Amino acid sequence: MGQVLGEPSPSDPSFEIYCPYKSFPNYRYVPGLNPHPKRDQNGHSYGITEVKPTYYPPDQWRKNITYLFGIDLFNYAYWWECHEVIEGLWHLVEPGSVEGQFLQAIIQLAAANLNKHRGLVSGANMLARESCQRLEFVSNSTQHLKSIFMGVDVSELLVQAKRYHNLENIVSISYKPPLIRLAGL
Figure 1 (cartoon, rainbow, N blue to C red):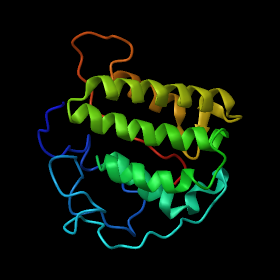
Figure 2 (cartoon, rainbow, N blue to C red):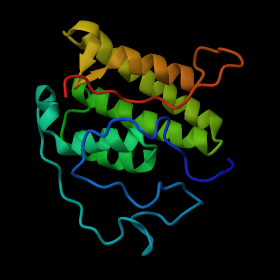
Figure 3 (cartoon, rainbow, N blue to C red):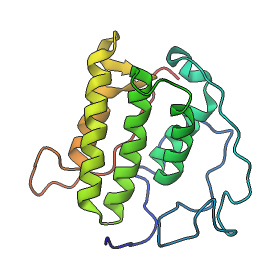
Figure 4 (cartoon, rainbow, N blue to C red):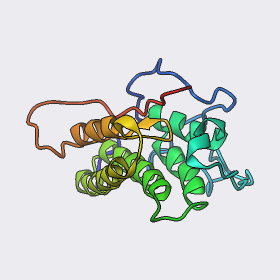
């Protein structure tokens, strides 16, 4: 069992917000620390009816409020909430497609970050490795310069994820959680 220290903090609390139309929940869900967002009557999303997100093709990611909000949640260390939001988009696409692999990579990376925060290192590493494999697939599949997909420099995210989760076995270097930067907004 991991150790819960409190809510995670964002890597950069002044990082750009891509979806200013939506507010962050009043806490970052960490199992064992605060109420389950949906199941507990004190949860930040308790009783809120989930609305199926609108599908936008990958090249129209700038219009996708759900996607932009999911990226904000990721960047501000609302990893459980990011997982939930991005999973709603993932259910709209073919899981084996480039888009499906990309969204699944974000979901797994958010879960890996939360597990690492909780001290669940083996689970975090497993999820981070799977996320990185998916990101490599996306990077190799894109037809764009610098492996940009849905506004994300996938190669850069891959480097950050590997560093943070120490998948390259770099000793005594501590990195902050990855940030997802969106290009072209």
